[in-house]
Amino acid sequence: MPTAPVAPSLAVLIVEDNPDDHTLVRAALRGLGATVSDRRVDNPEELKAALESNTWDVVVSDHRLPRMSSRDALRIVRAHDPTLPFVIVSGELAAQAAVLAMQAGADGYVGKDHLDSLAPAVTRALEAAALRRRERDAAAALARSEGRLRTLAANLPGIVLQFRWHDGRLEFTYASDGASRMLGLDPARLQQDSEAWFDAMPEDQAWSLRTRLEEAVLRGSELRWAGCIHRSDGQLVWIEIAASQREIEPGEIGWDAIVSDITAQKAAEAALVQSREELRTLTAHLAVVREQERERIARELHDEVGSTLTALKIELALVRNAIKSPSALLAPLQRAGQLLESAIMVSTRIMHDLRPGILDQGLIAALEWQARSFEQRMGLACDFTSSHEDIPLSREQSITLFRICQEALNNVAKHAQARSVSVRLNAGDGSLTMQISDDGRGISKADLARSDRFGLRGMRERADALGGSVSIEPREGGGSRVTVVLPLAPEEVGADEALQPE
Image (tube, rainbow, N blue to C red; front, side):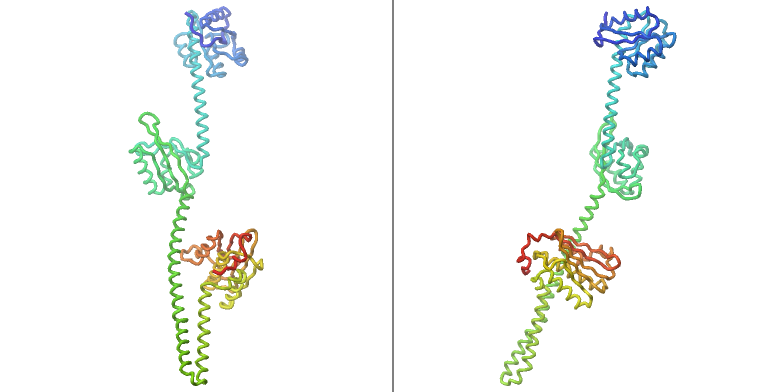
């Protein structure tokens, strides 16, 4: 009974030295029900040449030839194409030899006295070869897929991990190259010794992660954990692990995880917390300062202006009482004039402290006056220079720069132990820069880091409110420099607005 063909046509390479046996094999192949084209070879050289010169669907080989055996032919065929079907036909192949031939990779064998079995044997060999090719293609596709995944995992910013949790022990089955890049841990070492992961952690962090893993395993839930781990160079890195479970095989649970470096995020959070704390401290300090200022103004008004005006009232009463004697009026009137002058000076000083009127004449005039007043009051050389004779600014910009300069000069007077100070104002490139420099003892990093430096923080707050910045740093060769930069848009600021009183 003919066998259904695997394909409409087949190319068969026949390894046979006997022409008569070749004819018999060709006849037996008709049972395939396909159009068969064949070629006969009988030595290694011809076999190799035939394999190279043509594409064959199956090889049918005699077991024993003058210059080679079926095993030799099989080695040559497998070296050329590991999936090419190979069937042995022999009149003397013993059962044991047939088994060995099959173990060596042959797809079947047929005795020459049973050639009617050749067609079914070839069909089975073709099917087996097709299966091998599918398996080979699937394995190649899997290898390519795994290669792409490994490449993708290696280029992710974090670490890709696959692990099992077995009897309270973590076992890594895969670790991406990110482990080396992020933590300096060799991925191969992690797979060999999973405890190296915990060994790199502070003790409390390792305990925390183990506990969370055990809880996730018991509950069958996802794992979310954040903590810290030491890099190989000792640096502490904050990481976040996100892992989910999957069934590797029946009864065997594995985990797929992504490990992210959140060190920068943690630093930003800490900085935000510190900033908020500093802001709360500054707000409380400002509230206290406001109250102190109100008390000072009230005290000044009461003790000086009030007392002065009271004394003036008394003196005027004396004048009224002594009006009958003109010579007696001179001294009280003179004292009244002095008291009035004192009252005027006190009132002027109080008003000046609250809002310097010199700002109405523009920032440059105000800063020049401030430098001159500082020099007279403190006995320190203080010079002022400006790149422009007039710089139109908004009311807020003028007040901000004036107050920052005032605070900087006060700091020089209180802390710098300087001999000279300079104030420089420069407008250009869309910004306004003011620098206050001194030749004193300089400011240290410790001074800048102190949380009770409210004056320095206040300067930064003032500039930041207008989109500017303040930097405070030691000068090369000694002293300190305060640099203020504000964005400058003269076309948006009118001259009238710049001179509006506060």
